[in-house]
Amino acid sequence: MRIAMVASEAAPYAKSGGLGDVMLGLPSELARIPGNEVCLFLPYYKKMKTDASFKTELCARFTVSLSWRQQYTALYRLTDETPGYRVYFIDNEYYFGRDGLYGFLDDGERYAYFSKAVLDAMTVLDFIPDVIQSNDWQSAMVPVYLNAMYRAAFPQTKTIFTIHNIEYQGWANPDFFDNVLGLPGNFRGIMDMSGGVNMMKGAIECADAVTTVSETYAQEIRYPYYAHGLDGILSANWFKLTGITNGVDVRVFDPATDATLVRNYNAGDYIGGKAVNKASVQRELGLPVRPEVPMMAMITRLAGHKGLDLLCYAAKAILEQDVQLIILGTGEQRFENFFRALALEYPEKVSAQIRFDLKLANRIYAAADIYLMPSKSEPCGLSQMNAMRYGTVPVVNATGGLKDTVPPVNSDNTEGLGFTFQSYNGDDFRNAVERCLKLYTEDPEGWDILVRRGMGTDFSWKKPAQKYMDLFHRLVG
Image 1 (cartoon, rainbow, N blue to C red):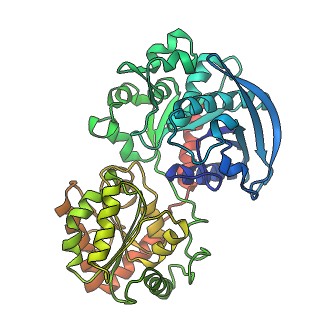
Image 2: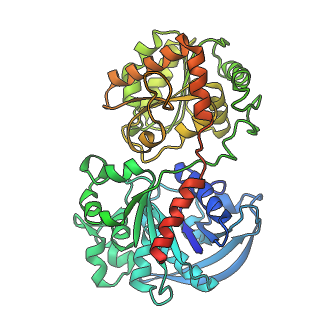
Image 3: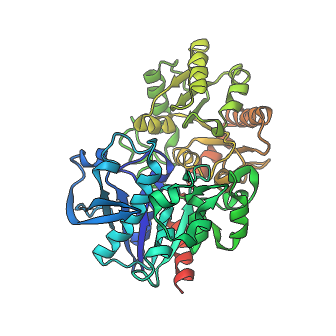
């Protein structure tokens, strides 16, 4: 099957969050399935072009029409065939020759151009896929443009739109429809929402199938609390909607081979391995080197929906116990300031690393005993699966993908992978943390059983990729 995947980021080329990890793991797994031909299309950002480790060759030059604009475009191909699939980059200095990926006033125009340029690139390459999968609002215009302007070139191609985070939808002013998108007039109603243009809404309306990144999140986003205004659109298109829980790249997140660790380990010798890494991280971050103390960690963007208000509420009560806490991440200033102050107040117990550091993140996964993820909403979440791979037990709010990937530990510890709470409040979160700490301190044998169960769980992309293939085959017939 010919599969085209379109995204605004993918590791290792450009990554700002979970989408980048998904666009590394999923194409790789799909490409391993016999008979598949997979291509990934990305913007050619400045950081990629100036990175000498990414070798590319020029495939074509062409012009992309965007309303009244005529934009020069170059198409490059990654010459390294290690990924097992072809990677193409859409080059335009005006749109992508900037520092950073997102956050510009013309982001809507940049990614409308990207979506249209991808379709032009496929025609130039004479690559007519059976399915095109686009991801989040940045490539949401792919199914819209295909239906509006490119159906003759792609007569049988089916489109799948995947929602990774419904909070970010690609809103624009109403004049964006004529001034930038340049769509036929009969698509105005498809793109209109509350008097403005909503690109995610257009993709939901036009795609042949809509997926999201966990089974529970697919149910949640049909309700106003989670849908950020799109509940009506998703309920009307419920027959298109499928939840497929993400995997993680088990080759990248593997304590047995991770080069960032002081000592590698697996489920068979994790106790010694984690002890060495724990002591190393304690020294590195200025915490007392104490092998017996339960170390809790949270590696996250410091944003409200990550449940940080619950941790702020419960932190001092939790720190009354003999524990250590590490925070790694950047984000909202109120949270950055809170954790800096907490570290000053509890220098023997708290380390606040207000920075973005992927290598330190892996070392913390390996060092910590408990991983905190009390998110208010979480489409899927990857950190909890990464943590379990490294033998770190998660404490999570039972929402979205957290509910799907962290079944609660039962009373006799014969089932479950972590500790969960059902209602979003600080006391329930603290109770879940205390239940976890109780098992750690009072039942070392039970803790060992739980850790090994988590490390032995299959979080790879193999099952999710097969579910995507089942969907592709149903669409193609």
